Image 1 (cartoon, helix red, strand yellow):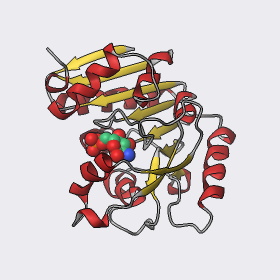
Image 2 (cartoon, helix red, strand yellow):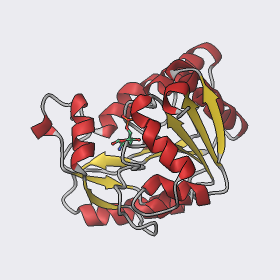
Image 3 (cartoon, helix red, strand yellow):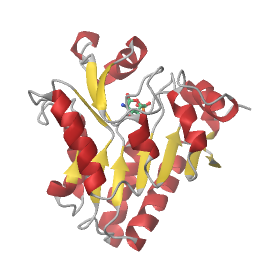
Length: 240
Ligand code: GLP
């Protein structure tokens, strides 16, 4: 894993945006894996600013998001579909038909998991996957204990994840308890991974990732077995 240490959240976001812009410029039809949560918000902001200033085009880019809450439609403000449209897709020239997010409001969720996994494969896989990390080491919504062989699947969210994400909802009770997520093997099939880590609250997780063993009790640890991982972390997240 290659580590880039930066001063703060702002710099992490700029660096991540530069990284993505460089790839999209070189391979305009790339398959980009995207993440939600608080961490990539600044990155999307910089990508939009660059689009407005320099016109980097996303017309031929296909995107795949990591996860979605079960039970929320794309119109629900807390769904990841809404987040992605609002934070990124609505502000660039991407073809919305090429933006893929698991659908959390379909009747057959199991079938949706299979469809999503196949869709990624049919598109030739993900070229660059952007990742955040949960305080408990989750990637996507793969909670501790998830099999490293998992494909896109249904998860019961850990109480700590529900609590951490409650800040986006009016109250804790509104946070869905289940989600669809790309599996760990789905993520590991990406040709390249860019992990963004910011803030004191991620310090322990980053330390465990770098210094701990590869073990299913800490999902992100599998990234050590991937040949092309770059971590962009700010000072607050790096243990001294
Ligand atoms: C969330 C998301 C993940 C995200 C992680 C960290 O629950 N499902 O994709 O990377 O947890 O979130 P944040 O960036 O808000 O700290």
